[in-house]
Each structure stands twice: as structure tokens, then as C-alpha cells.
Image (cartoon, rainbow, N blue to C red; front, side):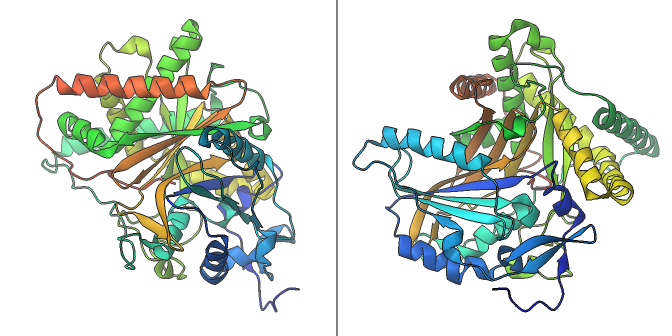
Length: 473
């Protein structure tokens, strides 16, 4: 039975591209609980809180005269909630394997076309990292990472008291220095134009080499994926950041680039010089301010609106042969990211997508986005989570991580901060990438960077904030 509809709401251009015959992207989020799951409390939360957050969660996508629109429908909660049954009385290690296999299976499942594009999975069995797990699978057309994190922060409470969570700040101090001479500004403008042309031509004309992390095959987004994760101390990352006069983004990007190159070299010596590009997802909302309460972002005139406001920023990964010091990967990442932020390629590519959509429709625009993703080797997405411990329906959350699904790439990396820790998750294609070996390379790369940092003198701190700049999706 459908609600009475007084007018459907159009799906955003990006939302249409993300749900087509060519591309169908989702976000999978995992909450690890400290206590066993009380199913009735979780269901009450979903019914009374989650469903009332946004009309997107009670709408289906319909096609009217070639344009997709959101149409409100009645939601039967049980149609969207699954509670799988595993063998009882087994060890946490046994449930670890079942849990990871379960995630791999639901990643490939399609959403019913006659129901809203989300589902929740309640895993009651204790794993090595949680007494129970709650999995949210949300189609990307519903919103981006900023939208979903705002939902999480607005609907969950602090574990130690009933107060709302503090909304994390994304603001970092501006780096010092004068405004620069006219010659410097002209030079920077010229460099920006050159970088824009270079970045745009990469997106349009070139593709990465086939390597141990990129098969180059068509349709990899439909192949089985393994999701694994590891945790780093945010204090150690901030220690590196401070000594190197960098940002947390610089440190993590440098460590990821270093680890990826170590893995590639270990698998194939000749891949050490191969062309390899990471696509970094960035938030294109105008303001660089903090998160907003959900009641603010769902307003039509919100400065930080609900929806999909994202773009892909290509960053060429440095080669192992270029450096002898692990810290050079951090410095190179810092330089590359700074240069990319001065480029207008992200803006131009978004405009190009709009032009393609007008000429070829949303399917054509979706193919354009798919080709840009397919040409690169991996994707990196990060989010800022709360510093305080959160609780959902009186279930304290021990850990949280997420993964972006439906990307035509063999390696996907996501990063989220929570309670003084940084959780990095890896989506790796089964049979191509060894997740345990890749994590070992990541651990080794970070250890080498940390040890090398210990041996240098303290430098002036220019940016005491973390995740400077825009929060990525």
C-alpha cells in the first residue's frame, strides 16, 4: 500500500548516475557492539528513529519520462531487516569466518526494485572484535558519507550519559605566511591551470597499468570481495603529523601509498615502476565547516545539504624507486594533495558529467563516471567519526568501519576516526589481492614511517587540527 503522493521529488543528477544499469554503488557500515544484541531494542530504534530521519528511507526510485524520482511508499520494517542463523556455541574465530563470508555474500546482492534502497543485518554471534555486529547497507543514491555520518551523529547518544554526541570539527588552523607577491600569485595561478589540464586529461584519456592490485578486467564490481580492517592509534598519527609539519590526511595517504607499493613489489618486481593512480573521494559542499545536525542538513536551503555532493580527485602514487626514506612518501603525498586542491579538474569533471547527462541521459553520465573509476587502481574515502564513545539503543559501540561497494576497482580503502583510533578497511577482490599480506605491508609501512619520525627533530606546528580541509565521503 502506497502513501498518498502529492508530487514526487526528483533524484539528484549524481544520485541518478549512482543507480543505473552501468553503475550501482552502496555504502556498507558496520557497528561493533560491546554487549550482546537485544533485537527488540534495535528494531524499535529502526522503526521509531531511523525511518523518520529522511523521506529517502521510505521512498523508491521510479523512472518517469526518462527522469528518476523519489516516490514515497509504505515501509514494512521486517522486509529490510535480516537476522542470519549461524551454528551455535562456536568460537569467536569460527564466527569471524562466518561474519566475513556473510558480508562478502550480501555485497553482491541486489536491492528489490519495489522497496526502499536500504537494509540492516543483525549479527548476534560474538566475533573476536565484538559481542554483536550491526550492518547497514545503504544505496549511495540515498546520500553520501557526510549525509550518513550526520545521521549517525544525530541519532546516537554518548555511551556514558544520555547527552547527544559532540559533532566533530573538520576545521584546521590555516597555515601561516604572508599573502604573497603578485608574482607568486601569478605563478600559482599558472600552475593551477597546468594542473587542471593535466588532471582532466588523465581522467579522459589514460588508464593505469595492470598490476597485482589492478586486473584491468571489465565487471570487477560484480566479483566477490573480501572486507578486512586494521586499527591505528590516532595519537601516533598525530605525533608523525606534528613532527613532519603535515596533516593526518598527508600521513595516512603517504602510508597507504608506501604500503601499496611494497605489496606490489612483493607480488611482482616489475610492477614497482607501473603507473598507479588513487581516486580520492572529496566532499564538494561549499563550506569547510563542521558537521551539522540532521535537522539542519535536510532543509532545502541548507549550506551543508543532504544528498550526494562528491567528486573524485586523482592522485598519482609515487614509486618506490623514487625514494630511499619512508618519510618521503608522506612529503610527496602532502605535495600532491596540495597541488590537486589547487586544480579545477574536479569542478570541470563535474560540469562534464552534467553536459554528458544532458546529451546522453543519466545512463550516459553513469558510463562516463564508470570509465573514470575503472581507469584508476584504487579508491580512498575517509570520514571523521566522534571522539566520544557512542551507543545505539543502549548498545555501546566498540568500533566502526565502512566500505564503498559497486566500484569497478579491485582495491578500495576507507578510513574513519573513532574514540582516538583510526580504522582502515580494505575491500579486496578475492583471488587477486591477498588481504592479510596487504595489511602486513600496511603495518610495516606505518612502522617504518613512525620509526623514521622518531629520528628527526621537532618542527614548528603549522596545523594542529586533524583531517584538514574537506571531509571526504
